Length: 102
Image (cartoon, rainbow, N blue to C red; front, side, top):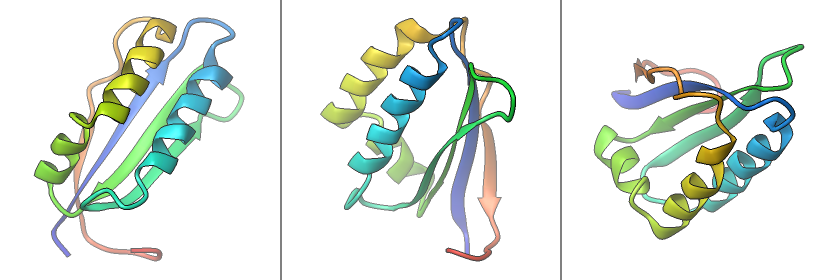
């Protein structure tokens, strides 16, 4: 399959998890039609309102990296960053082997 995947976990400031998640869901909607985007999931850690994750699958890492430079992505990143309680965890990168839905 040879697709690129990544997962990043974010900790938001207290009470900001839902607002942060809404931004990520907006980002997910903006991925419709973006070259190479196969999957974009916003996730919340069970029982932890302020721990939010993003899991993505792309045709290539280059497609992923290019998406971060899109104006809509830059706008959403600017809105989201002030809600974080520290830096996001280092992204875990994956070689996607396959599975249901891909």
